[in-house]
Length: 204
Image 1 (cartoon, rainbow, N blue to C red):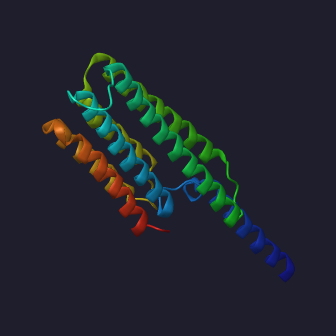
Image 2 (cartoon, helix red, strand yellow):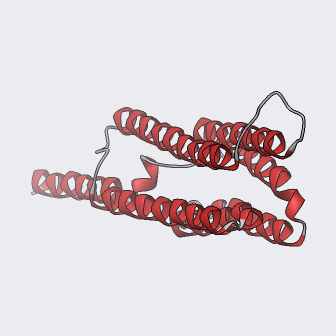
Image 3 (cartoon, rainbow, N blue to C red):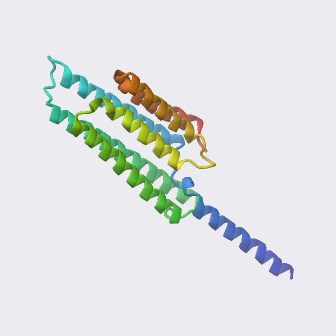
């Protein structure tokens, strides 16, 4: 009888652990620690690069003779690179966590999260391209910040409520960009620094 009871307890714990593993995709893919620091660095570098390109294209005398079309291509390329490197950072960090904790890297919820992530990127990227084609350059940064803030809000959960801080900051910076269009470069830099700070504070 005791052996049967022991078997039931062990089996129940195993089911609980498997359920925990399958339900908590954020363990595999989470925006914390070194991952957040790297993504913050990507934002900061991309913001600096785009600011340099824009200033060079607007300056009358500069060593970089960039046309408006070339400037648009470089901006789009910078956005794509940030997405690519951020995705790779999340993936390799998730793979390392899954191996360390002996979890499945891909489960039902992580697959759903991946689909949402890809869809969100498509929406953000398409919106930016449309704004560029329409000539609404001043709306690029606030639009990106609003959509990025919503993306963070979608992926927050009861164990990652701190993401609301980054989400709220993105929305606040978007409002600042609408009120002060020239504040766009500083907004990207602040978002990058906020990611770094979040990664330093939130490690687990």
